[in-house]
Image (cartoon, rainbow, N blue to C red; front, side, top):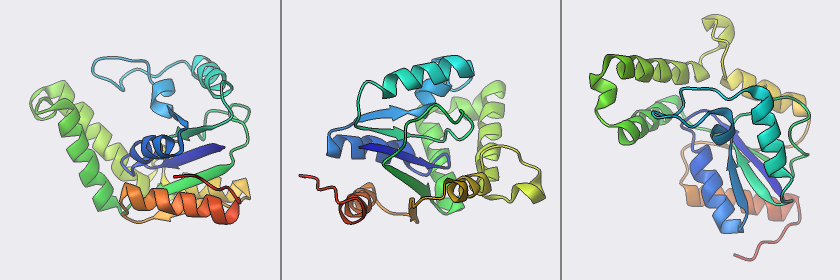
Length: 190
């Protein structure tokens, strides 16, 4: 079983991915671990795309059963095997942005409000995350957006489980397992 979960930053992809992988006894792979070079503070230096792609391809071939979390639409067409299930998460923008602000403070502390460079990094990140739900044609935003994700879903021309709304992790897992059992005929011993 190869499951891909994606959505906007702060939509709960990593939290759900780790919890689902644990529940189903699968390995969890997070796109951030491949996209970013480990730094302190984290998420400041992008990994070379070829190195990133080679690393994730190698990791995913080690098992036939895993959960991959994160947006990887621009990584290339020959990176990932055929997914058995793709799950798209969407949260209302105000809920998602509040989660991100809380997470950033928990992750970094008050330095994001005191150090000029860290203030700028924090503000740039929140602005980037805010642009996800804004129509890129009107805003001129060229990064990851809801429209980009929805266009990708249409282009796949396959059924995707979309979980839209503010649900608990437990309810999201139940939706995924119910989907797998109903649509894929997969039974899980939980």
